[in-house]
Image 1 (cartoon, rainbow, N blue to C red):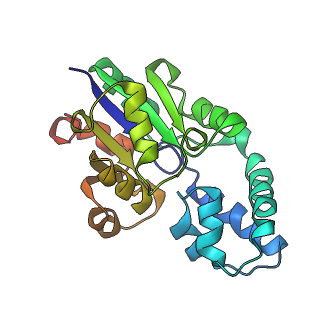
Image 2 (cartoon, rainbow, N blue to C red; image 1 turned 45 degrees about the vertical axis):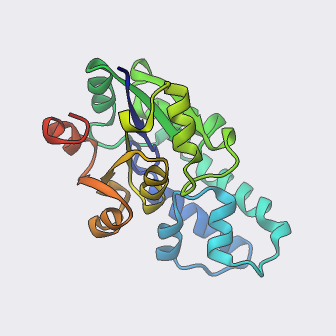
Image 3 (spheres, rainbow, N blue to C red; image 1 turned 135 degrees about the horizontal axis):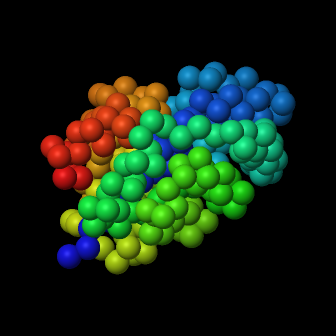
Length: 218
């Protein structure tokens, strides 16, 4: 039977979380909001609308949500030509594809941003499909992004593993019935990922690749 290895991208395969923190912080600052960077970091991984709602609350001027998201997108877009892949990212995906796994990306990125991320990973030959937040009604921590990835792979939840770097990833994967693996390269503590549902936690893609034989992706 086919198996699916589903991967979050930002903070899991590409070292972008702190770029998102900085550019969201600047987008909020330009709009007159003082949001602590540590709070932004904790919200990274949510879809843009959910991130704004979490950080500004329900009593915010919701008519300005799109303006905030557009400002973040423009600021973050300045880095598209130099996004750095995390150590071992491309090698891990190619190894899994070679071992018979269907590799699927599950990301909130789309368009030019997704193209930049895939160029950074440089493993298109190993990626079978991509599930974008644009394809579902609700982003992580809802299970829909992971469920859509499984649909694209044609694989049931019990034959899949989801790898991510945030509590939102772990919760989404757990709610989809998929075994979850966490990585620390997104900047969150091991305990947070484990509490949110990670069955195993590794430092980064290179560490997971080196530990593959004893991992949930064995």
